[in-house]
Amino acid sequence: MAAQDHFSGVNMSNRVGLLNASINPAELSNLSSKYEVNLFSTSINVANDKIGFSDIVNGENIEDLLFKGNDPVNMRVDAEIYGPGFAMRLDKWAFGITTKATAKLNLIDIDPKLADAINSDNIVGSSTISNDYNQRLNGTSWGEVGFSLARNLFENETHKFNAGATLKLLFPGSYTNLGVDKFQGTINNIAAEAYLNNTQANINIAYSGNFKDGFTDFSNYSESVFGKINGVAADFGVNYLWKDKDSYKIKAGLAVRNIGGMTFEDEANSSTDYALNIQSTPANPNGLALSQFQDAKNLQEVETILQNDGYLTKTESSKSFKVNLPAVFSAYADIKVVPKFFVALYTQQKLGDDTKDNQITTQNVVSVTPRFSLKNFEVYSSWASNEISGTTGGLGFRVYGFYMGSSSVVTALTSDTKQADFYIGYRLGLK
Image (tube, rainbow, N blue to C red; front, top):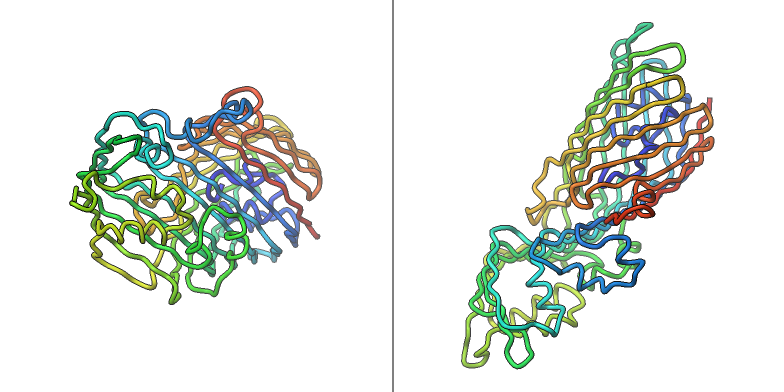
């Protein structure tokens, strides 16, 4: 749930561990074992607002579906990998250390007419585009090392209150951003070629690390996750338990996470703001031919095409730039309905503005997870309303320290879900 409902279900487990602390550091005070060792955890999530699971199964043309209609296109591809981690509980205090790698590729509010004109050779007639928002293509990879501290503030036979915090050291890997803000322009079909004319927009083009050479190849993410330390972030949380003799009747918590950011610094970096102005000239009487972008592999090539045609005016440029993590506010309550059966309610609301060029994105989520829980076995089904992909439902289980699940597998098999995700991991609890 740190970014797109990652590890949904298992991170609300009665068997409290480091994954619970990832949504609220105060949960460390509720560790089920005196010592907790995380061996590995991996979660991958793909969400969009256009393409359904059945469209992929039926072999539909993905590009045609993605840029169909008039509503902006949104897509999130998001992966998290937790490496070795350790936590311990001592009397009223608890401590933890975690390692994590994150990679994200996002399409944010892309105008389907403009995207289709770039990708298609079948443009008919002309159309005028007028947007008052920022269209973004954004990719980011980074690593984290987190140091967590939690304390029990009050406890008696019935009630327990905890507070906690996590300090994250950030290791920026690679970054790319194309922002096209307040786009106004006309697309014309002339001799079976799409041209852009009478156009104005504010553009940000930024790239760093491996992404300067491209951002759609998986190796560019996997090879550039951990750079040198150059940023910090923090999580803060509180939680409450209404106890009973078996576990609790209600567990509830509040947290604010990912407060902070990181700076990308390198001589090969570039972050430049431009004013785009495309008008007919004697050399280009029809404006800008959009087919020039079809073979562009990275933002440097896009930048060069626009500069060579004289359509860009530089307004600001920097070799180093700071980007903000996807800060969120979250709240949850895990309620015992009958012995061994619980229902968890969760909401996540983003605090940043996804339209800002320096903001790494996330999405708002509301979920409910019924769960049957024994000491060494759990099975659960998470159902969520996601800002991008709509309604999703999934299944997961835990056997001792091994867990696996998906928050979308049920809706993928029974309806036209617009999300696919999967997670797996293993951890050890030591008394």
